[in-house]
Image (cartoon, rainbow, N blue to C red; front, side, top):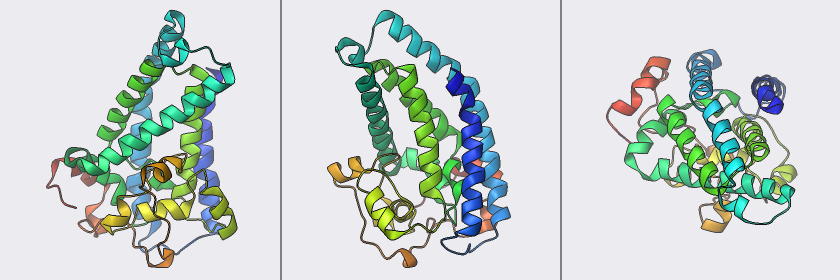
Length: 261
């Protein structure tokens, strides 16, 4: 639990670090003023993080501890070294988040919420947690179901949460990364160039590259796209191109307005 208490400091430390990197090693110039986007993105991050913590943190920890005490879950039924259970737990959680991410694109009801994330007109580290509160709450329920079913350990879950935060901050950041590093990183993980494709205004490109920590699920299930001219990528979705329509309150109302591509 001491590691979990440190998690918010890691998250906001990551935000500060990547904002600094974006300042000195920017990948591309913003097309709209950063403060206008941040006035929506940062309040969403704070709202989501606060409510998620209040609703889910204690419940998830209690669920994990109860599962360990009663020896429930598939991983608890297998005789495996503890380190292997941790690795398996992280892989399982990441795979189900990949599947959930895919469903948020494929199911119109879920896309209503997820398009809040995709309608950001530029990408930077503040985009990483720009989600509608409803999607955040759905995601918490998915994680609880996976944790209960597979018997994920507390250490594996906390490590996964930290890895997810740092991963999404990295691959949403508008930072200039050496090509050789991204080519190596993409063999297992998600680099910025891969997720930049996912935020393309082109639907074919947007409906690909769903990986969060690992790129292997996209590779195995045929949803990986890499050969896209990065300099031609336009970020966002075609139906929401006016920054005036993308303020904090408009984003909260977006799932309940007309569902467009």
